[in-house]
Each structure stands twice: as C-alpha cells, then as structure tokens.
Image 1 (cartoon, chains in turn green, yellow):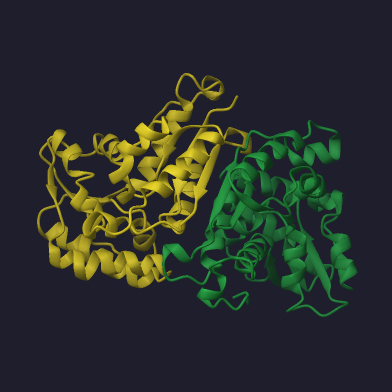
Image 2: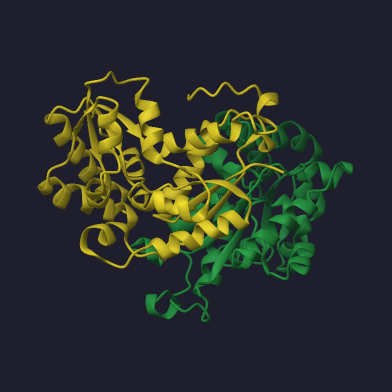
Amino acid sequence: MEKIVGILGGMGPLATADFLRKLVERTPAARDQEHVPVVVYSVPQLPDRSEAILHHGPSPLAGLLQGAAVLRRAGAGCIAIPCNTAHFWADELAARSALPVLHIADAVVAELAASAAAGAAIGILGTAGTLAAGIYQQRLERQGYRVVLPDADDLDHLLMPGIRAVKGGDLATGGRLLAAAGTALQARGAAQLVLACTEIPLALAAVAAPGLPRCVDATACLAAACIDWWRAADAPGAALLGYSGQRT
Amino acid sequence: MEKIVGILGGMGPLATADFLRKLVERTPAARDQEHVPVVVYSVPQLPDRSEAILHHGPSPLAGLLQGAAVLRRAGAGCIAIPCNTAHFWADELAARSALPVLHIADAVVAELAASAAAGAAIGILGTAGTLAAGIYQQRLERQGYRVVLPDADDLDHLLMPGIRAVKGGDLATGGRLLAAAGTALQARGAAQLVLACTEIPLALAAVAAPGLPRCVDATACLAAACIDWWRAADAPGAALLGYSGQRT
C-alpha cells in the first residue's frame, strides 16, 4: 500500500497548481514512478478565510473537514494545506480528521534554520487573516527570531489588493503591489521575507523585484515537508531510492 | 451539491500540475469561488503506458480503475485524464467506473474545428504508445483531416528521448529534441501540430522554437473541455457567471 499525501487545496486554485509543480520540481526523480503520490481536493467554493477570521464571516471549517474526509477515504496518510490562512483551522482539522497536518509554518521554520541566525529580523508577507491569527509569529519567536509585520496601511493598500489581483488572474498588478509591501518590511529592518501567502510567490515570479531581500517561499517549504514525510523510513520505496532527506 | 471534475493524473506528475494551471488560467473568474472544483488522483506508481501498449508490459489498468473509484467516491461527476497515452484505456475506464471520460482527442478536434479546414494536414507529436493505439488518427480523419505521423526513426531518436528527458526534469534537452520532431513533421507537410503528449508543451515552453507551425496544446484543450462540462446548464452557478462557453 502506497503512502499518499493528501492536499487540501483550492485556496486559491492557482496556488494549488503552483504547489504541485514545486512538489514535483523538488523531488529527486528520474521517472514518473519516483514521484510523491498525492490526492488533491481542490474545491474552491469555500467561504473566504480572512473574512471568517477577521469579520465573523461564514466559516470554511465545514468545507475543510469535508475535504479532509475525502482525502482520508482516498487513502491519504497526512494533510498538507497550500494556503497559509487556512492554517487557522489546522489543529481542529488534525484533531477531527485524525490525520496529521504538515504545518506550513513549521516547514518555513525548518528552512529558515539553515539561513537565519537567532535574533535575525524576519518579515512576514501574508493576508490580514494569517497575521491576525498569529500563524507564524509564535513559531518564529520560539526560535529567537524578531518578527516584522506589515502595518495596517500596507495591509489595506498593498498586501490585500495585491493578493486579490492574483486571485483574479492579474499577476503583474499583484506582483507590483506585493513587491512594494516587501520593500516596506525591508525598510523596517527585515533581513529575510517569508512569502506567507501562496499567491505571493506566483506574483513575485511574474515581475522583476530585484531589490528585495532573500525570500522564503512557504509553498516550496511545504512541498519539501511533504517529500520528507513520504520519504521517511516507513515509506516502502524510500530506502531503495537512496533519498538523503536534504532539501535542494 | 457542487459538480466536481475528477482528474486521473500522475502520468506524469508535472503534466498534472501543468494541466491544473491551464484549467485555472482558462477559467473566467475573478475570485477563488468561481473556479472549477476538482479532485485529483495523482499516484504515479503506475506501470509505463507505452510499454504496456507496445511490448506487453504490465498493464496500468488496475491502477487507473482504482484511481477512478477514488474519484467517484470523492464525488466526481466525470473523469479527465491529462495523459494522452492512457486514453488507450479510456473506453474501459468509462464503462467500468460508470463515469464519463472527457476524451482528450475529442477536445483537440473541437479546438481544431476553429482553425483547420477539412483536408488540412495535421501532425501528431505523441508517444509511441499514443500513435500505435491510434488515439488521434481516426478522430481526425473522421473530420476530413490528413494525419502526418512521426516516422520510426524520429520516434526513437527525438520523441521518446525528448519525453523521457522532461519526465526526468530536463526540460531544455526535452524541448530541443521535441522541437526537432516538430520540424520534421512540418517538413513532411503538417500545417498544424497537435502536442499530443502532456509533457511536450512543458518542454516547448522551455525553449525557443520559433520556426514551428501553429501548435495545438492537447492539455489546454482538455482543460477547456472540463470548464465546458462544469459550466454546462446543469451546473448551479453557470448561468449566474455568464460564461459564454467560448474557448479563449
């Protein structure tokens, strides 16, 4: 029986496709059969996550639980969620689906460990919901990092309109706004930026943003965590493939 | 209850990610909730499709049926397969899963109808398995097209090594070999080329191949067929969104 990674996606759908591409690109494989098996539930007809967290909008939890149940029935042994904001419900999802959630912020912390010393200032580019929910702050501070967050003005005028532009397919506008949000964090001391919304790397890839500091792509970190989970010792094929567990 | 498109993927996994991206890009949508809901089964531990068709290798049919069963249990109302060669088993899959298969060659024929007159010479770039199984020939000839196929030499030295290079992550080598295969079909009279292996558009996008005739991307055609299926009259949200059904 093959170990399968369950992907709870659709938030947004382009970010889900981008996550799958990064999962494939980060997997050391010479042929189809050496790639990570996944089942993806990408049903984007869910209530908006930031609205639910910030303004008591309709909760997406019921839809997320339904997706988790589909993934479990499909044979998934864990859940990865290529949406930072949805991690607000990560603990409840893990508890009620009885599947472990590979947490995107844990994956980012693991990647930062290689490049940022304790005390480094780390900027977070994410939705208002992700920031209000504190999905990253506590995990980063626990490692001794100083967290630099966008101010309310940049959230309203750069980050949220930038993310909405990407969801509407306008990567160029999104990239321009989101690069400006990154520059603002840099001006306030951030030595590295966490791209903590799965729409952001898509947008920055579409524009030239040469002045930004090192960007840690949370989507790619989550992909690496999925590969690690699949290649862990209990995966039947892992030893045969000689995978080192290193991220490339 | 939302209509859901079932994607039987993993053949290869990069092509599945590319298909999802094209599905999103072709959908007229301004926010997440207007995108096509999908469930994807991408378990690439299936026997090689061309080997099974050409050399009596192990059949992938059992694995394909298992994937179709997962998609059906997950609520899918149809199946799309972003792998041309696997369409060798399309009829059996449709019959045994009791779900309609949106056939990739039908989607290509629909797209060609807008740009190629009867009598036009259409070149097919595909795997040896796709060509041997006749997945395209009969459908194109029924529309009055003349079909131009790669010869055995180009299959062995350009197409198959080019596709293997993409599956191994080397898009530049793949692109160079596959562009040469296209040039050879053009030299033999093809006025348009069908990119009839989901790895081929990925590779051609990675290289400059300015001399090729118009290329019809079978992956993108299949994405358009999925959007049409979802937006058909029985989809609850279709009328509200004012989708015209036109391919862009």
